[in-house]
Length: 493
Image 1 (cartoon, rainbow, N blue to C red):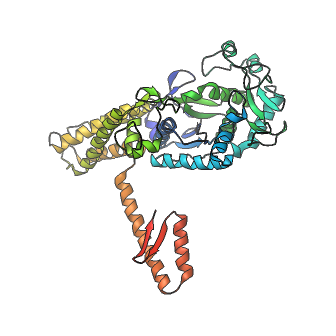
Image 2: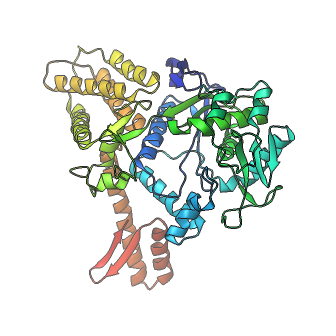
Image 3: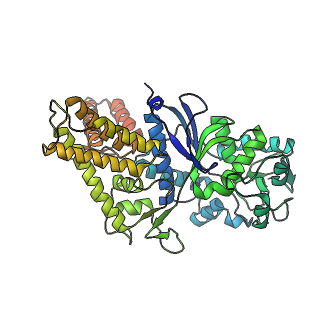
């Protein structure tokens, strides 16, 4: 049965500035696109916070039995910064610094991104397209915008004509409640180097200077796509001209998402997204995180304790629990005190989850368990309010303690509801890793590997070297390495 039919989900839409009743374009199915990382450096905690918010949103929509197509891109194409200087292209700059090819930089930090997200128990998106894998689509979109009069070529570059867009009754600036006059007053004409008709026009395609490494052939000469174009190309390819949810950090509202709306409307004649969602920023010790000021920490440094800000290391589950105690639209500040308090709260929750298995049922219930269960749904239905959900989970743990002390009673059916609701919202929805289940899986894996080692030893004793090597090589493809020594064969994962 589809749970979403029994729940009334509201989402804060950045476009309207209000919470709206969520109604998907297609019954029971949702298309969701989230702007992914630019992989020229290690993923930072602010990224983790944004992607964690959408991981929980993805998880809850799946829990409600929606069929979700979740697309999160990888930006791996070089984009010039506002001053147009190739030396400030992030990929070029990093490749020179590390003495690597730009695509080596991309691979290195894409792997880092995935490792960090795996550590925090993120579900993978259904599709993870890359900007460089969709150059053809971006060229085709640019050609269509030129043909329809929304873009123009200048000195090998192509720009979106914002004034022409507005002349046709469209509204550039609608997501951020800005008008063209305001944009014109606050725009510096740096990126176009006097190539643009109007300072607020943005690049769809940039002509590559001789020094620019990442470049592709196009009808306008060798160059590379504009930053905003890639998301329009990939979101429409995999989700259609109009889809349900588009998310990202609030720093992307302008100009990135504003430009996406304009590109979508100009290309397809419809506003591309029904619900725009934006996460707020992450601060540390009350200050904005910044490498230049030194108020900065990488995710792994928080987990392994190798930093000057926190008194100890913190398990990824505790970091995740801490992050989700703030609503995705509010500023989240992390500090040593906040992390220590989160650890204590997390331990209370996990102790309660263990204790509920020891509760014995009674013939009557003195707790209204169904109302409590609905309160958990009500929290998530109210724009994915994880802090209120966590408060309700602690209320459930309070019930567990009262039942354990024999101050309340509960029937077997209500006890099952209490247990399953606690586990479902903790592990399935909030995405806290179930360490007990993970340990059981690890023990099973070790047993299977030991069995294969036994089979390999038998093959070696029979001088069946082909089978022995095949077992070793197959395990290695699964990142399980065998080590033969005088005391026998061991393995590492």
